[in-house]
Amino acid sequence: MGASRQALFSQLTASDWDGFLKGAEKEGLRVDRNGFIAQTPHPEALGSALTHPRITTDYSESLLELITPVCRSTEEMLASLRDIHWFVHQHLGDEVLWSASMPCGLDGDPSIPIAEYGSSHIGQLKHVYRQGLAVRYGRMMQSIAGAHYNLSLPDSFWQTWQGVLENRQSLKDFKSDQYFWLIRNFRRQSWLLMLLFGASPALDASFVRDVKHQLTPLGDDSWFGRHATSLRMGDLGYHNNAQSSLNICFNELKTYTETLDRAIHTDWPEYQKIGTRRGDQFIQINTSILQIENEYYSAVRPKRTTERGEKPIQALDTRGVEYIEVRCLDLDPFSPVGLNAPQVDFLDLFLLGCLLRDSPRIGDDECERLDDNYKDVVNEGRNPELRINRCDRSTPVMTAAAEALDDLQWLAEKLDHWQGGKVYREALEVQRQKLEQPGLLPSARVLDAMEETGRGHREWTLALSAEHQQSLRDAVPDERVRAEFERMTRASLDDQRAMESEDTGTFAGFLENYLAS
Image (cartoon, rainbow, N blue to C red; front, side):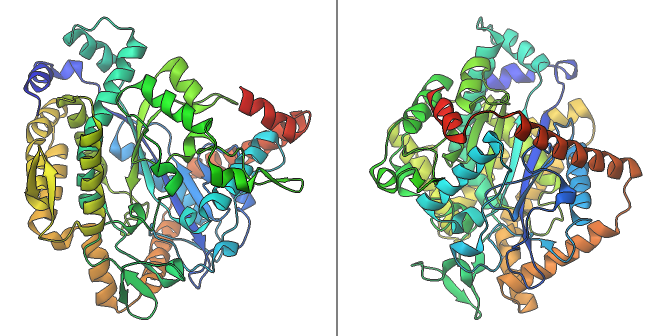
């Protein structure tokens, strides 16, 4: 831990600390009772996927995305996520919500329906973007689900911290620089999250039909990585050749937005061959390396809430970084809501620790080492012989992980002292137990559970998903929760209709203006 920052933070008092602001976005496939991807449209009882603030879709019409509001505590966030799940499960009929990151039964690209958002220009733009993902990468990898964790610190803390550091920047610029400070260290340490929370070591055989891979068969209908922690984050998951040509810089906001913008305005030969239309139908937004910023796959993103019609780069450049989005989390299949409390508390501790370590800029050589660490843990994290590069030395991965947790002990004690209780020390201890007993790692638990039940990935996940659904349907929430979700459903459908009636001109004209803005 960087002594100077640690020492400065240690001088703060409980009155200087106002906690974390946090939220989650949790994806999950709707599947039928046979464990095959649902072919039904987004349930109308869940409102408009375009405008609902809590319930939308990701890539596929069958891939739900559930979004909490900004919360002040882990308990509040998980309660909100559970309420959203409860409402969703009341309206799935015979379908269930898939609890694993790697998908259910698929029958190639045609079996994965692309999400529909209505006839408004914005709705069509979202659909065409997804069509573009299909022609560029295929639909299979877009059926993978995960959880995103969003974290920020309140302005009261940033003002105090700015004073402690004797910094003279505007608060907007100071916050952006500090969030990128955190992001650089996140990149140095993200391998640890893949070890502790990777939960996708196996997959259904339908996902890799006619695909070359090096997985090991598991029964007749599943494959697994013998030491893998997260197939979702490996080469079978979010990966593509065009993006490997990018050199997105995470050192500061200016270079980050500039390199992203360059990718959005640089044509890629293969995409030029495809073109933007088939007849009168748009099949991608443009022929650039990236259609839009969100196409860039990364384990972490600096974020700023956008206004209607505003692009993410414009929002970041104008108003600075608002929060950090952690994108590398597999769903916890053992949790009905895909996340668990010790995990969330540890993420708070981990991310604050990233802010309080020394954080020199990342050069090309270090960037390559960090990528190697990440890939090695994703593919071989449970291999007792695996060594990674930590502090410029080759270190056994379990030793490196134990050292990383030890580095956070002082911070856990500090936060617990300020807030009362043992929340952060207990969250840290849960992670230590995984290192002492590797069978407790989520990736190991998944394989052990499949072996114990004698079920393949599809059968095991379907049974677990049905159990989660029943437990959520049996819950009796406050009737005000039901009423509020029903209100949001009605309002979202009204909002979509209003957007569709207010649009003028053609979508082609709208897209031309969007690209020129």
